[in-house]
Image (cartoon, rainbow, N blue to C red):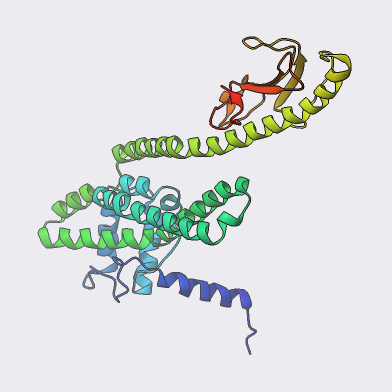
Length: 329
């Protein structure tokens, strides 16, 4: 009597669930599409080698043999397509399929991201603290992208098998008795392309540049708003202490001020360029990290207006949209 193995059972259930997410262009028929049943094993191996080429030949021959044995297109893992599906498609000369994937496939993934984030924003994310909302949205987008990348990676070998069988069927139909012409045809339509690989790297760099240009500023804006708000709160707390000392002793220019946030430094001065003041607190931003390093050296100043009863005003070189309305940029 065999013992029940829960991990094997869960793996089987997971495999069945993933099997349901089958791309519509990969048939579940038996035998697989374009399968030439009349070919001998030796002849089929020869044709496969012509189509695959020398790069990763043994790997794809093993995958083809596995699918031939199963009698249908079945999933398996493919690291190259998981890391960069469009790069792998270009490298394997699947130019039209790469275009369709980039236009239709990536567009579908983006629509899925937008709809999922919008729904979860309404249901969950809007109830989170503001500082966690943008990271939550980014995490959801990343999880959706990884989910679909996993699906692409699982079916890439089956897709490549189908392409090989289709090209082999075309070669046999076009050149039924000319083995040399069959070989030339399969090597032209199969194998790898260094030009495609270089194009993949160029496209990858372009895509990363577009993503950085679109999303990094959004992330930076959130961080900038948080830093400016914290800077104003920090200098406001220091102002209460300085104002109290000023009423008794005058402007305490020797008073050491420290900020809990190491990105700020503060000092008390008796004069500030451009404004009439007899006492001021100057907060300077330093050690701000990417993507808001551009804030380093910017200042926020709270200064006392002379000849008034405890009136303090604000002046800042920071973002005028993020600082309080009372501050002058």
